[in-house]
Image (spheres, rainbow, N blue to C red):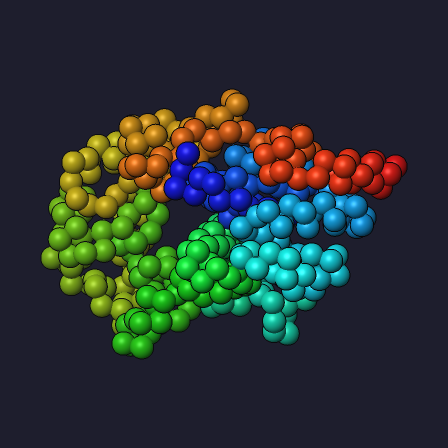
Length: 386
């Protein structure tokens, strides 16, 4: 069922951030109808968990019949999600002015990289560009190195799709009080910038030095980094607090007094440029003397904040992940379980993705739509792909 059971969402097919946000809503029980292109999505695999828990209808939004059918769906929805560049939805005839005039309670959610206004709003971009211009990317990487590439999880998924789902939920709560919908402008740039809130506080207090490898949480400090082990695998080492750091040094068997007095926990220029690299090299030389899992046994049972860096296959099999059911299998595909967890309205096991256009009959019946309208749209789809 999930806590969003009964919420009707129309998702116009997009890439990355918007499908992730729609997945989060669908995982929580929302009835998400995805408007796919008649020729399908060539960029997202049919087995992708990003497309799970939806029903699909195929509409050509360049055809009048497709637009009319989309508007009929939107009339019955509480939420619309689109990820076009600014102005595209308006040119198609499904912009917020038209949709909100027809459905005053609608939450019209727009997912973009740069946002709806500003000099870059019409420019192409990807996750790395958005987190680069936010100032976030410049904080991640080793001392003396270049900014690290953190997959596309910060801009696309955390700063994009999750921000979208949060914005939609906030607007839904407000609409149920006011009776009025509104536009949610979710930009990956804004989401990435929001992650820097704590660091702006550190910066104002003089405890944060801007730059790659120049802050203790971004890859510069020896006590917050990854280390290669004898077997070519890695450990994540993060004993930030003094009590954890002391326990870590004791288990490691090094001169605790010397490590505590050199480069911990102060963040002066000398620490960053001299002490941290020197201590990091010393730790690297120690960790490479034993295999990863042997080091895990050394630290087992102690609050030292040291864990193995696991492959995806290892993560699926880790005892904690198994006990917590962090991952599930849907139609033979291992994937993330719905999150967060709810005590009274649990999300349940996800349903696998549906082929484009597979659910038109069920959607028309469940949402009490005009069947002839969608039959005309289906014929227009066929003509448009010939």
